Image 1 (cartoon, rainbow, N blue to C red):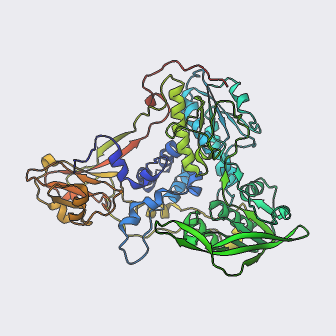
Image 2 (image 1 turned 90 degrees about the vertical axis):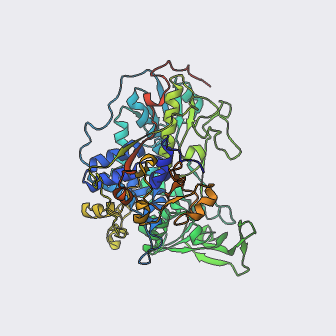
Image 3 (image 1 turned 180 degrees about the vertical axis):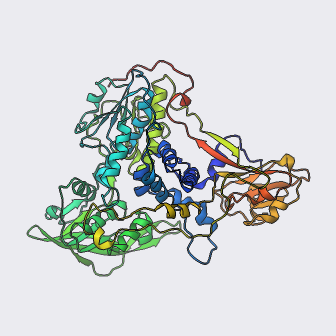
Length: 612
């Protein structure tokens, strides 16, 4: 096995599991340390640079960082309680809730550079593009059919999860950077936008069409059956204020969870979620399912809709076929009927949340933008550039429905592509991110970070009283951590970005680091191929997704091998080492964003406009 390549940022970035898992690569441990120090405004700005909407995401993020959190993984053998990750998402909200004045911290607008960019849709992807390009001097125009910016963050996420005031604040912060917002102006022709003389166009209009339910009786009872995302939008804008007492929600994703919890607040007394799959296979986030169950909502599995029952157009309920999961030799699942009688479920209202689709009827098919057989635009997966070179897509409009943080990541990448294109450079040539490694040593046995490993369990977020929260669609359920609880939760972070960096030239092979390591993750052994080497370490390294840290040959011919998977970053190896061969060095990743750092040259003429 070869020496670990530490030349670029990729190796140490991957060790910071939470940041590696985040689509926008938010430096999680960095902002958690700032929260522990009470530096909430600094923590907010660290977030704002990468994920743009800390207050929104601190309440609604799908949290890909948390399943990746090292805290949960290294405590798997803790018999006292189920291991749980650091509450990263809720700590992000703490920074937003307790931040101070941001005046002087936000970027100022550069002199106009004469280039115009249109963003279609005012959701998270478009607003990220606008946030990145407007301070550089671009004239950014955002089009949206609604009166306020936010896209599906405003229309589809219930207010009991995300207060409107938070959306207003964080979307306005982007618009205040000099972005022109054409509210109430729905785009119905791509060709018309291109003929307005924009140098580039970004499409971030989401996936606005919910999938339809196609079963007998659907059309006859249409007045009582609603597409979930449309119904949520109507609730959000106050067009719907009540619902039948008996409600069926079809679907197992987060939209279904938002529908059932909203229905409960609008008068639904008997609310049931019915899904085709098993409970564990539902696409909804685990905490979304837990919240629904906590509010008394039933979830029924392995039921497939057969027909809608009605009397003279009035919905009475639905019949469901009972199915079970069977798996073939390759592990592929199929749902097969059990042969049991169909199940009848009475209902006054049915909400259909079985998926979303992209809809681009406003893009003329002869304007140069190609679409695949699924109706999605044909895009370069790295640059988000369409077959019409100056038109880019991002968010749900690009590759189908995902989540807010993925849309933000798309926006950052598309902004880099647009900036390079309009400066005469190839968008496909992506500048690599950069990283700093800085020693945290302050003395022989002192470090500039807190490396005491807390044994505390995950803190529970307080909720509003159920009898109060269920009375209104606008009462926020989760109240967020107070400062004391936030400090306690921050102590659970293992500082994974403070890396153990090994210098083989000063190592005397005393094995002191091996003896003191609490996780048995350091081994000095004969070199070998990786697969074989993993089996003869002090503790076998079984997680193949996490790299091994391997040195070149030492004086004895052995190599140092460290299993990064279970390292606590406690620094005991560095404290024990008598020669300083181990050091604790903080890595701070700098992802490439639009601007001079993303370009090959300082400034070059932009390409001529491409007009369809």
